Amino acid sequence: MAKTPQPQKRLLESFTIKGLKGPIKIKLGDYVLLMAPDPSKKPYVARVEEIEGSGAQDANVKFRVRWYYRPEESIGGRQPFHGSKEVFLSDHYDQQSVDSIEGKCYVHNFQDYIKLQTIGAEDFFCRFKYKSATGSFIPDRATVFCKCEMPYNPDDLMVECEDCADWFHPSCVNLTNKEAKKLDHFYCEDCIAQNRKKLQKCNGNTSQSKGKCYKLLEPEGAATWDDALRKGVQEFQLRSYSLFTCNCHSFVANNLNRLFYSGHDKWNVVSLAAVMFLRGRWVSTASMVKTFLPFVLVLTIGTLLGGMTFLIGLVAFAAVMTGWFLVGTYCIKSLVEL
Ligand SMILES: [Zn+2]
Ligand SMILES: [Zn+2]
Image (cartoon, rainbow, N blue to C red):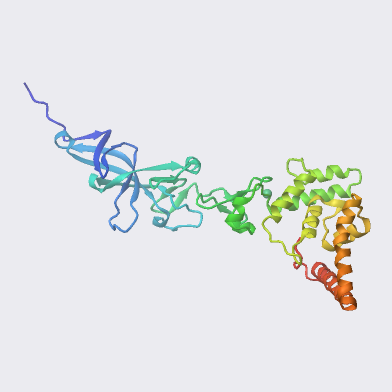
């Protein structure tokens, strides 16, 4: 019987290598990690494009790969928006021998990568193609976010504005990452300013009722006193209380400004105290007693024990406090927080 001659080379669908933890089957289209010539460097990432076997039972296997470049291997180098697991699909192909393979990996598309619950050492992502000769990228532009106008780096924490849906780096909006993680809601400066403007316009128009004006403060048009209070609480929970610079009056003034109470947002601790003093009404007799009883007690005991000295001290203390808040509100603007 005539013997059919074995073809010298043939294309294969897969091949198996001896991995550290047992055999690994590598198929066409799989992503692989290839040893870098310098062992201190990270392994190269590539996709298997063609597998060629030769010799008896395909004993010798060679394969063609398409390289993925890491940002530092690109002409422009690594940019701040490049993720640590980012690679670019290049137009650079090579033939490699089986023993250069370290193992398999996975190159996700960007959308899938950001949805991964856990990111393993073998997970990479690719959002750009790269031309190795010219150093150019496809696409040559990416959507930018934040005030710094940077493409998204999935390694960085970002917070989303609930109004304009833009994303912001905490550091770009004066927040620490810890503070940003604690936020339940976030609105960017522009959206807050925009809402204030709308509100001012509305207040200038006398045919609109104030109730409607309050509603403009919220992107969903559902503002209530409670919403304003909730946002105020959210803002103030990150601050530390201080009788002199950030006290309960600051908190109330902040909320009145948020609500554009009385048609303006110029409320401060002094105007609030004045309104309370001149226009405030007691909610009950008990509340009046609760307010004045401690003061009357201290005044009586103080006067009995200290006489005139106590009274002079008390008046001086009141004068210094009043002076402090007047200066802190009208002269040195940032002294008393709002
Ligand atoms: Zn930014
Ligand atoms: Zn916004």
